[in-house]
Amino acid sequence: MGWLTLHNVEPDLFTAAAEARQERDPAASPLAVRMRPRTLEEVVGQRHLLRPGSPLRRLVGEGGGGPAGPSSVILWGPPGTGKTTLAYVVSKATNKRFVELSAITAGVKEVRAVIESAKRESGGYGRETVLFLDEIHRFSKAQQDSLLPAVENRWVTLIAATTENPYFSVISPLLSRSLLLTLEPLDDEDIRGVLRRALTEERGLGGAVTLPEDAEAHLLRMAGGDARRALTALEAGAGAALAKGEDTIALATLEESVDKAAVAYDRDGDQHYDVASALIKSIRGSDVDAALHYLARMIVAGEDPRFIARRLMISASEDIGLADPTALPTAVAAAQAVAMIGFPEASLILSHATIALALAPKSNAATTAIGAAMADVRDGKAGPVPPHLRDGHYKGAAKLGHARGYVYPHDVPGAIAAQQYLPEELRGRHYYDPTRYGAEARYADVLERVRDRLAGGSGTNAAGANGAGPNGSRSRTSGADGAGSGPDGAGGDGSGE
Image 1: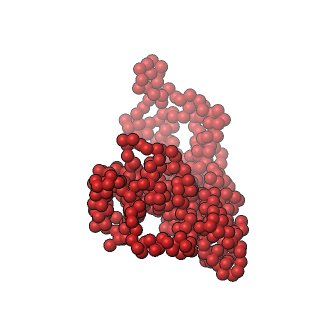
Image 2: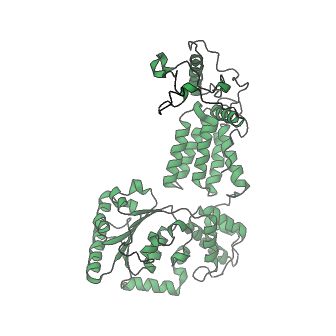
Image 3: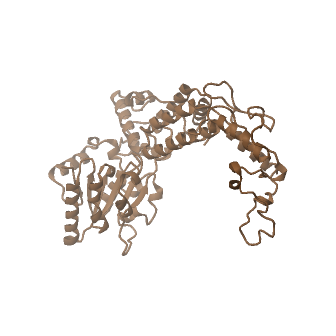
């Protein structure tokens, strides 16, 4: 049977003894537990969820609400962002009966027992029940179904926590009866505040040790937005320092205690941009081993996986393009997967995408094409839209000559009509100059025939597309089997954010 915790009711002898011991000896509990906020004002981050009148503030009885009672909520966010903390604050601040279950150990039997008890409390004493269900994604569909009557009839107000996307892990009927609140990873300033409070407050380390800037920076990198991870590492480092008779947590001591070397990497400084740039340029250069090295440096240093995924999506279009049309879908899929699961598993997905992009054939033809087109527009080379291409659907368009003479391509053999599409000022201007690397060779062959047909030819005797482009030059990068190089930073090298 899963453990069931009832707050605001008479505790059993063992629970009371455990709580009394924690009061006498703070070290009996982990530092992360001792430093857990006790009020909503002590909660760091998640400001978007703590505004006046928010569902969480109404759960603790702030703001009244009149006939509109507090809603059940589902808290979704990465580990260490405060899901359990928020539930704990509600349990301490509310005058409601608070029950806690974990989906790891509880089942339908425990859920039904809570619901029946809640109905008795409501009917007999007029007291509402708040049920906190941790790890709800571990509940099966049938187990989640057992919650529906209680939530729908508000026999309990549910606070459910999950690290997995609830649109995939929580049944739709339960989602529709609850408010979905998304928690964001804590930023460095949030984590820094948590660490400094833990160092000085009596329930924390009480000033027993100090934390130099380099060691603090290392803890921030390791935390990756997870306050629990930061406090756990701080406690390990403090214990190691005190065991040596030292009152300062030196970086070397911290590294020894958490078995993780400090990586020279500043997420807000030069290292952030230099390593990101090196990753993209290694992919562009088809050096898969170098790309994996820089990827590893970013991961170990605690870089936001979503930032890395965004760089990979840019690289897929900037440096690969149509030479491998699967590159962009691969990068997009990686970004979506990373957003769903986070670290540590996200490292596998980022590795998958990085290897695929590094070994793909390379072409920057799409990059140079849009660059050339935008340059013409900025230079004023736009010109009016040809009359036969203008919108002819509205009343009076025919009198203006709009759409007159337009040839519908599907009405001619081959579905390519010989007519002018560019403005007159740009007649004959070509922007896309495909390479013959990878899958883009097919586009090069097609483009020869299409341009010839558009110009009124037969589409069979076009000039070779592998020569110099009509704009006078071609800039391209090579695939894994080539040795050419493209312009450094064409369209941006993906090193900034």
